[in-house]
Length: 201
Picture 1: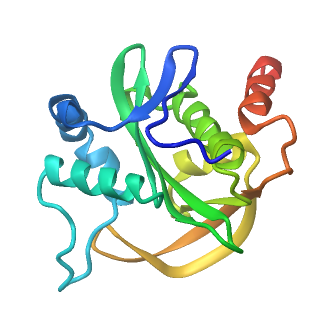
Picture 2 (picture 1 turned 60 degrees about the vertical axis):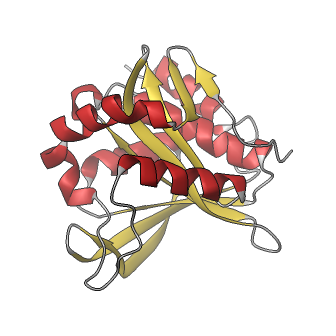
Picture 3 (picture 1 turned 30 degrees about the vertical axis):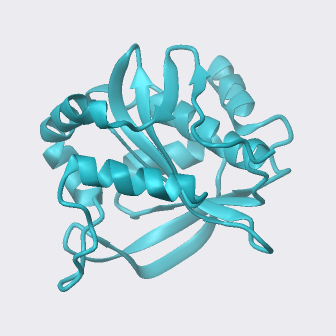
């Protein structure tokens, strides 16, 4: 319980490992190719907010600091030895809440291959078993059908709509909230996802 950072998780050819400075070239390459694919779902800063790092190195340093403080788990997604996305567990709260949220993105060239559901399942299991959290949530824009399929595949429960919840693509956007609490999936989310894939036509 409460395994220290850094932590690497693996399932076959897919792994989650801590983001690092030497990922810069691969990360930038994937992001450049996917600008249009990711733009509608990307967090943006409201006018007057200036706390976001302006460089990859600045982003990595900030994420590492948050990880050391126990507030986030910043992973890159590796598939077949290539960086194809990112999964971040953020907003980790201890005490009486024991909660966190998961955010993610993936290279459009590999979307639909089960990479992100596998990565999110590993991250969720780690939140419950590695960190001892009680609840994990994922917030998704209603128009983001690809992300909605991820939570559907993994069995996250819909909890409702949050109006103007996050600043995305230049404005405040509504989001749908999905969650799981520890104990809802006794064998683990990854094991259930494996079983689902095996029985799918």
